[in-house]
Length: 317
Image 1 (cartoon, rainbow, N blue to C red):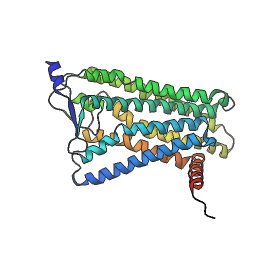
Image 2 (cartoon, helix red, strand yellow):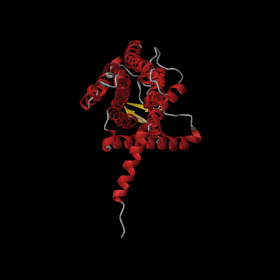
Image 3 (cartoon, helix red, strand yellow):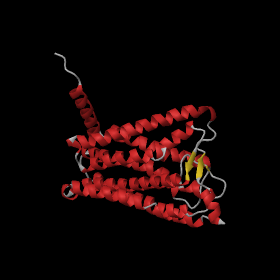
Image 4 (cartoon, one colour):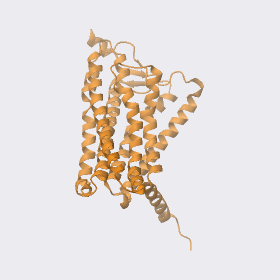
């Protein structure tokens, strides 16, 4: 019987923002602007890090890798959310829904690992400055970034397999703005306590362990910085970490609240609000935070843009 019910459901309906009414157009415009800014901001940072020789340092390799990841992280959900705001038909196939969930969680997990690698880089730079150039080589940066992506893409496999085997009945409306594990579990025809426990275990391991390592690194960093004799030295050391720490707090603050829980859902409104924070606002904030707080990166962006435009501008004699 379960198999028959499971085979009935070939697609889901993403309800998105069902009660926005008259402000639907404004919401679409705001999300579109946020998405365009996210894409352009992260793309600029990624390209500048690649093109400007002054930024060929481990810290900026990681910043560039984070920006590249954010391009794909937002692409998994935001275009679909935008399309559903305009479209009457808000359907997504069963396979498409599972793929969206898988890539969203894979990229999210990769970001957790990458932010941890960035914290380790800052720890070495400030707490082990003499050994830092010998340890944090370009080869190690590439290996660490590749490791972050690999681990991230392996993490959600068990969750996706378990969800794919659930029987789904006639009701196929997902009370969310994109496909995700919690709203999918709410539609299943059988007890999903095993899925909830597995989700909790996987998410707690990824999110809490990486967050603990990041905070431990910053505990050591703060201790080292406070030992610096000059105020200017302390300020410079803290400024190299402030951008990364701000990104960490915004990203982890929202995903811990959303995914490290032993229940399927909070309120639907809260789940949708949190989804907008970690899928739209965090990737939007990253280029703003890094470009505003990092003078070296800001100067490199100006250099790259104005030099390129200067080269291509026609000269009249």
